[in-house]
Amino acid sequence: MLKYVLVIFLLITCLDLLGFESKTLAGVLASFVFGVGLALQGTLLNVDGRLLIMIIKPYELVELIEGHGEIGHLKDIDICITKIITPQNKLVVITNGAMSNGNITNCTTPGAIKEFHIIGVSYDADTKQTKDILMAELKAQEKVP
Image (tube, rainbow, N blue to C red; front, side):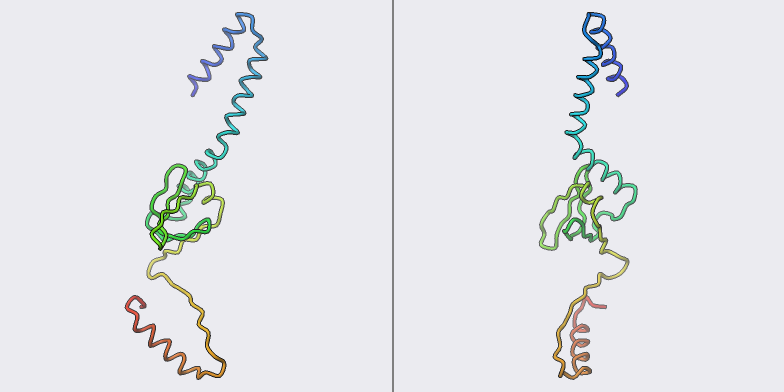
């Protein structure tokens, strides 16, 4: 990068010696750099998000995460995007800028993944019988500890 900066200064100096106004050239160059910076703003945000993800490490590959409204197993973290495989086996691509600026929920913890279900029961139903039926159903499931 230093090489390119020195070449630019050399070109400005040479053009100044030939009679061109160096202040005008410096202004044009500053406008060009400002325009390029604005054009790359979104991309630089994604690269910055990748660096933030690398430093904080809120999740790792294959973990079940929820981020930017999507839930799935983390497949890959590239320089600008994060890839998630949903339970429906769809590939979701989210920019790292969105992942680093939003809420991230890491659903994978040591042990089992917990699911919560709300089951409606009539007010006049027998509470003990309802609990016994639900526990019997849970114990019949092989993946429930």
